Image (cartoon, rainbow, N blue to C red; front, side, top):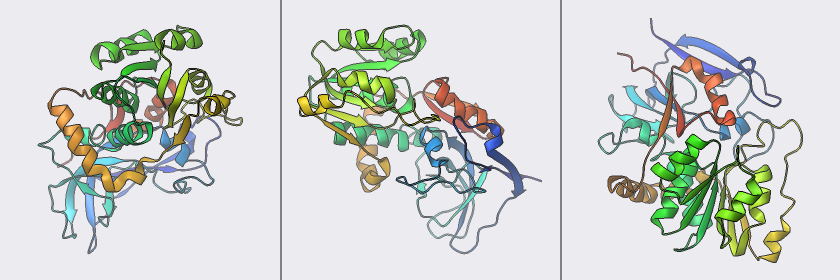
Length: 336
């Protein structure tokens, strides 16, 4: 008998999460009631933001409750439906959590066209990752042709797309990533102009060397020292985009803030955070552009798939160890 496998939050982590923070549960696959749809999840997105959702406290979204299925973006196939808007066989994306099957009332569930791109792409490049890169850079960063864009976490899912979009917009693009292999990928495959290996180079010296004209847009996924050093290179009217701060998420001490923040004052610059959910009404606009760039060969999509839902606790930690290469997700077998 096929069962629904779930990871539920058992207790809130202090520092880096461990398997003990989760409860692995198997239960009967639910049956949709009137107005509901049952989806078999085939891909589950693993994102740095998930670490923040585990913490109690005020944020842009309520924390996952103890005993609740862990929140996560998903892509899958409708296997039963009592909802007029969805039919068996439809492919959909949504946020059904870390479980093999999910019930939905249709809110926040979107049909996807797998003829346009493979299902997993709708969880990455054409999903929240792509939307984050698109709106974070173009709406918040507002790059102009000829400007210098510096990106931390450049080999990650969001960072890699940000750099490619910046190149499409005619910018000089410099990435920061960990390790020679990732830096080669960023330059040779994604087309960045340069990439700094923070593991083997002095970050302060390297940022200065690769941004001789200063930095007009800094897209930050890392925070901490990287953000602090980038602030020393910003130009007049620069834009600093705060997408994330993965270096700080597992801290057991207070978050390390930028001591060089007065550079914002001196340069009359702007530092702004954003949450991609605020752009939901405009997602279609971004998808049209992204599909066009993808078809034109201007965007490359790299995914790092880990097999099986049982691997979730360890796979999530790959994000914080820099072990993933591209968009990280769980791949689940399709069951008859």
